Amino acid sequence: MKMEIERKFLVKSDSWRKSAVGINFRQGYLPTGDSCVVRIRTMGPEAVLTIKSRTVGISRQEFEYAIPGLEAEQLLNSVCELPLIEKTRYQVRYQGFIWEIDVFRGENEGLIIAEIELEDENQKFSLPEWIGQEVSDDPRFFNVNLVKNPYKNWRKAH
Amino acid sequence: MKMEIERKFLVKSDSWRKSAVGINFRQGYLPTGDSCVVRIRTMGPEAVLTIKSRTVGISRQEFEYAIPGLEAEQLLNSVCELPLIEKTRYQVRYQGFIWEIDVFRGENEGLIIAEIELEDENQKFSLPEWIGQEVSDDPRFFNVNLVKNPYKNWRKAH
Image: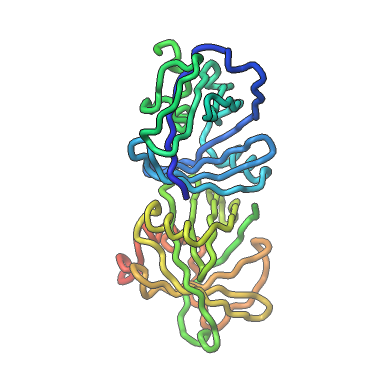
């Protein structure tokens, strides 16, 4: 179990892409109530099952377990809610921090989100020039909500 | 992933108890929709997380992962639905089969259920003399439903 503190931003340019290598992610969620999230995720050949408890501010409890890739595919294809989240994740180092940049495909095509993980909620960090608007507190950008209401449904309104 | 085929009976006498050794189980369920079950279970010092897909007849898909006991306790105490299921499980061998006998405590005190796991739905087996009524198809006896509507609420009507 760990506490997870993340801040999340839109990405406004492509300048981060030079030399960044991406890994394909495919993930889905079991149909749960609002008090927790159960996520199945494949990352290239690896797979994890993650349980997140209710969000309190931007901190929450997280439990993560490696599971066999084949079983993760079975869970994604037969038990998880549709559509699945499909994205390529890139990692970019900037002034001592690692930014994770998710380029979505499928129902969320066109959405690019950059995340940084912090050790405490007040930790200082510098914003790369390709960072756009912060969306940490906007629930539409939670991956679990991008299943229920994909970006293609509301991108024009944004 | 395995397919699980179980038949379930009430227990009508105590004659199985001689020399049977029990292990304490504590288990709970994450709040999910009807299409799957996510169970956290501690068995003595061990713990497992199990995902079961929608029941079709008495067969269903099951995915099971060992998890650290301390994390299982945290999930039971902070994320699972209440009341938790508390029971002692005994194993009794009878004519080549192992029966698992669950003696419930807490909100389900008074309920004793014997289960046998089969390789196919038509496999033949002998009933020990302490076996009572079969309840395989009665959803009230599913452990997940013993959380929502514990035995103490309806035992007098049975």
